[in-house]
Image 1 (cartoon, rainbow, N blue to C red):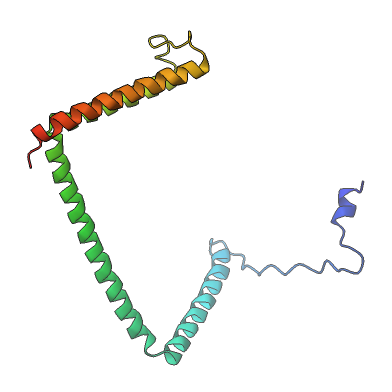
Image 2 (image 1 turned 45 degrees about the vertical axis):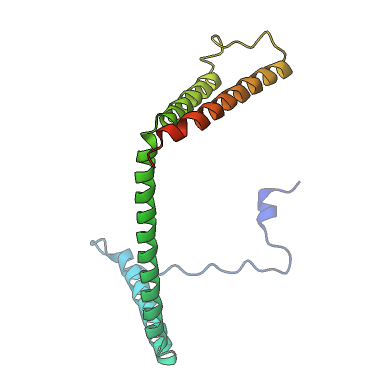
Length: 170
């Protein structure tokens, strides 16, 4: 094992080099000394960006117009898309409102809510005492649950096929 100092030493033939000097900060009573260095760096960066932008505009005079046209097309497309989505959502809301007036659909919404509540309560351990399946083996429990679900779906399908058309408005 080597010590930390040995591990931190650069390999033979490699120079660690001197660290870069820290920019000098003017010592003042005002808290602007370090801000002065940052302002100088920001001014330099702004000048580089402006020079690059000017150079690009000189070498690509049509590009700005092309970009403006492209942005206009994108804006138009997005506005059209938003209008289409709004129209579809509005239409779906109206259809859903009409469907919920059908007692068969309303009963499905209620049944789905009750089913979700039973699943959540079961997972939380609050319902195991009411619907105890402890007397069955694991495979039998799966069979009982599958049987109950299949029975509910078959009865639901029969009732829906009989009563849904009766209450449908359109």
